[in-house]
Image 1 (tube, rainbow, N blue to C red):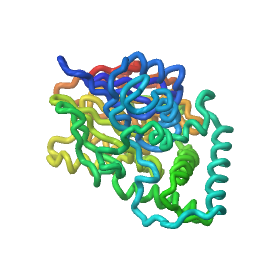
Image 2 (image 1 turned 90 degrees about the vertical axis):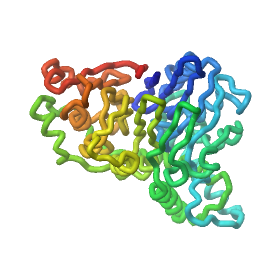
Image 3 (image 1 turned 45 degrees about the vertical axis):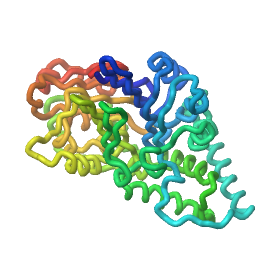
Image 4 (image 1 turned 180 degrees about the vertical axis):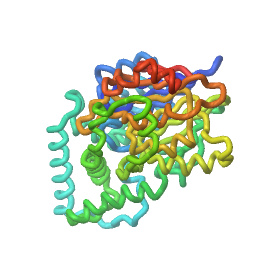
Length: 405
């Protein structure tokens, strides 16, 4: 049995996935640790874990709404093998030290270069502090993630021999004998883009990075700052779009689809979690095109498309830029999960086009309706709460934090 807990993490992600097997220990995967830490995430983790083991803490990519509270959680949890909230078997996170695709400078930094890096970190931290999302998590705390993992001696990217988590380094891993994870993204190219972009920033500052940890701190801040700049603003008018049978069918034709090109989102860790008889798809903020490509490698018989999953955690909080009409020709489910309060300052997720693509198609064999599951009530989607539309397109809307599959 799967229990998928989508904590109310503002417009971000924080999930605890629990796989329970009769007579066996529960397998726990924690995915991201976004906003609303003290009021929701922390008390729920304490309630649900009760000194259990987090078998993988998967931090999917550097974006405030996914990692804002991760460092604070590790700090509160304490040192490896002396944890206060839950034992952590392993952390997954790709930081600068894992992106060894280009040759690093082997020389020590000069005092002038060291000062340049520290000055950048100080300025970026100060800027982030002036734009705090949640008052109890400051920029210094939120961006000390890599340093916190090291300081508390948590096993880090052990499944890839301490290298980057990407499909070239890892395809499948057995979490336990009965629970398997199949990696779908990122690929090496997406991580190279991430590394190259940071190198370009450093080059403009007259810096050539070496292996010193100060560059990991700068990398974290740079990516958080850069992802904020790259967030698209084009979908903020979702609440103004009419929702009816005609528009739902119109939205699914794909004419307005513009694929995501954010380098940060492209580096997202996404995967399939499988047990003996169930499989669930977790899409993070990954690109639809990357997911389609990897799924077609794993499931080669296209006559059996769309591939049925017992649940799908929708990409990028339901942004249409990460959920193309083509993606929904390849995947389907009777449980679609959305994590957001719809209150991002630049846009309202989920997009009505994404919802339309999910519901405007025939049902899988043996399925009588699709459940659209949200962890907040979303007023800009009220038009979908129409009984006639639910009957026409065979779906229900459910608001809950815990979903049992």
